[in-house]
Length: 419
Ligand SMILES: [Zn+2]
Image (cartoon, rainbow, N blue to C red; front, side):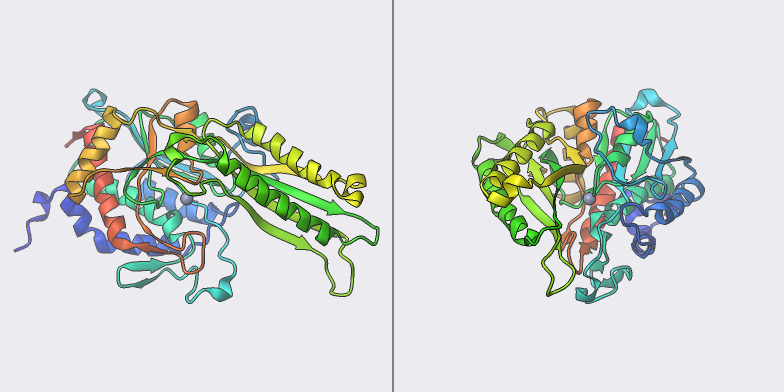
């Protein structure tokens, strides 16, 4: 016989609410939310936090002028009109029973292009067995769903956090991280934060930084600038090898090639019979923890201009180099034997019956802001899946359920509860 509802534990409530949780994921998976166009999804989430969960809800766009003085700010070539942050807060009624906590997730996703290569609609959120498919379903709408339903399960079990608790839905993580920075700068801080980025159920204790840059070649002369641009592809490949051969932080000693220089776009020319007049390369470069992104930028610039000086035409017509988007430091957490990690390890082991692990992420996440600039312990711990940023992106729903249970248990342990 089914246990009476009022007898269910928080963990059992996650099971009980599971169909509803999957439907919620499907609903938000069907709302396109590419960076710069998060507003529609944010309206949905703000309404849910306020009316379904009874949270006090704040809504604001990142203030570029205010943020631009911060060392963690990334320069932008776009505005934030379509990108409001949403913060749901519950004020703890017995704060002495625990510590305050943030669950934070980004709601922006990368472009689904090329859509024609998908075997399903990237905004269809199709479920097949224990997988759901959509752009951003893994990165990171499943995590956002898990953190929301963790709190919902706690409420359903008749409890509220004893200390202050926030659900932060932030924007523009995929290009800058300025959404998360804005939330912290507006004063939405706490004693710790969990971010359900989809890199699996090992707490992250290190991550890379990253920088973005654009190389532009333009001329009215009969010189093929596309061919000139290709010279820089070799330069950047050599630079990538150079960085990976340097002395690196211990966290990344087991990674074969942690730092990538990705030439993400290369656009040139407009007609098969015409010599291209313009070539533009846009690139991302990883940054080891401890390295200043500003220094990396100088180095990138120097490498490109040195290569240009070896070509007679480029010597006279050096490329324009612009830095935009990511200006992100890497980070390493030195002490993983704190109350925060012990709490996470305990609830992980209790829920999953497997030992707790650690990992160093060869990517950039919003966790850096908390650790680097606010002295707030923050890790990524989230669901699993496949094809992140790729065609047919999918999430493993079983891992989302487990993460929901771990977050619910962490919330109860860390904040304490009142009935
Ligand atoms: Zn992400």
